[in-house]
Length: 332
Image (cartoon, rainbow, N blue to C red; front, top):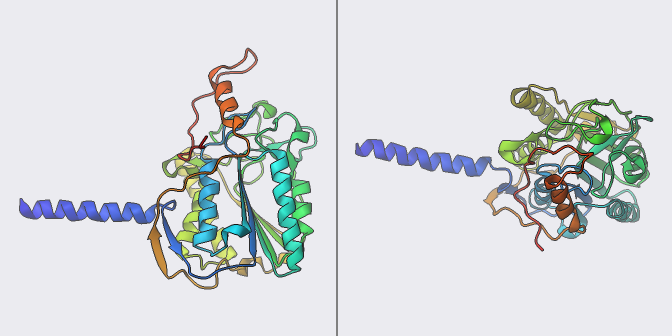
């Protein structure tokens, strides 16, 4: 009996340690090196004023920032983290990135991360990033990926890396459809990538970017974070893309019985993109951390408005299912 209790206790301890070490949010590789020439803009849009929320988008952005700082050594002053961003917020922070990268004159590396709704224009088939104050039925309220890529491609960067945990088919993260799509998935146009830029997107055209509910992240983002965690930051972009694509493809089919295949778009100036390194050396230690607390959003009314819309639908709006939310809460 005593031996059995010892076995049970040791097993419980092992499972606890394994759970801690497998949690990408709280168990991170930590580097002592500083990467002063990398600059990043992180936009995580979860609480929309006129559309349903994007489950876990705030988690995505907050933890991605943590990996930039802790695992890759990017100073916090080099990162603009923008939760629940309006169109003005998005344009303002992209302008900051353009200015700082151009001042570095070829020495700076830019990283842009976006988690939130994407949307298609049904008529032109153009793709847009949707700010929290945007309407999925009105393209002018969003930021077109065409404009987005042109701005980033014109920067004098050493490397520009874009992560998009969004889809542009008109689908929501829960698999339903946004109002603009009228129940039909749309294959949006693929915009050209220029400069020295690589865009790593969560889906192929017409697919849905699903959440991984058990991990409280977008599925694409989770496997990006896990790859950085397991590699200690010392991983090439080619290796990361191969692993994330494989894991998302398999997991989406197992979890949702649907295809989700991440895609890579590289400019002619980034022909060596598979060899781009996130960090030159693996972080020498791992640390267990508390979950981060989110700062006050620039648009505090967004969450309240979205919640009210969910609870009190109008006559022209169907009642939406209860949405899974981030564990990160906005402080008032």
